[in-house]
Length: 291
Ligand SMILES: Nc1ncnc2c1ncn2[C@@H]1O[C@H](COP(=O)(O)OP(=O)(O)OP(=O)(O)O)[C@@H](O)[C@H]1O
Ligand SMILES: [Mg+2]
Image (cartoon, rainbow, N blue to C red):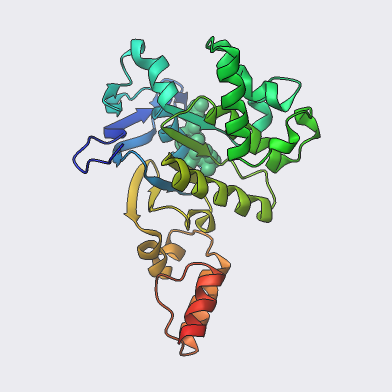
């Protein structure tokens, strides 16, 4: 379907504030402390966008992600998913069909004793007919490149393969959006990179909306937009090139500077004119070769 520039956002977060249930302080047991985990968040994500949600531990990324499929409801403000208000409980089923989530530990999402049965599970529960289940399972396994593992038990798969399996289980349900909440944090750097590339491919190939939640700048290079959070607020937004251009600001935010960006800084100091568009080692090498 052709994209309409004036179509409403798939995810529309309007002035959202959220506080977790209260803790009591040591100083005053009667004094209730209500530190909001989200403070007046405004964020719109268009259908087909690829957004990286970035920030330190405890800044509110997961809390915000959970608002996007009605696992949490705002105390103040509104969240609309494809126009559906998450406060409307009758829409929760539909909202969760639109927005699928994958988490840090894939094992929490794997159920069946065979890979292909695991992908089929969600479809079977929804009562899809067998031929359609078979077709969607094959398609989803192919999309994440683990078709050859279909007859294995999930425990025989590596961590990266199990995370792909969890993604296939969500893909088979054909969501509009996948939110990956630190989905790569249990993986080694190489497998992490592969997972980021997979999200990028799913975004390009299927026009899927992707929200990649991470505290690592290097995982955000494939996104179209980076949204940075701090202490429950969105404090900065921009394309990867815009965000990476201000290294001092990134250091101020105490984000770990990725190696390619360190190299860019070093090369610029040495007199090479490297543009802000060069975010990966390959792109940097290309610019030097073209100079
Ligand atoms: N279930 C909970 N009950 C009470 N407070 C919570 C709960 N979950 C999170 N918080 C608090 O809310 C704030 C935001 O947490 P959240 O998990 O959303 O951050 P995050 O950016 O996802 O962090 P991380 O990088 O560690 O995953 C933190 O101060 C956290 O301690
Ligand atoms: Mg989190």
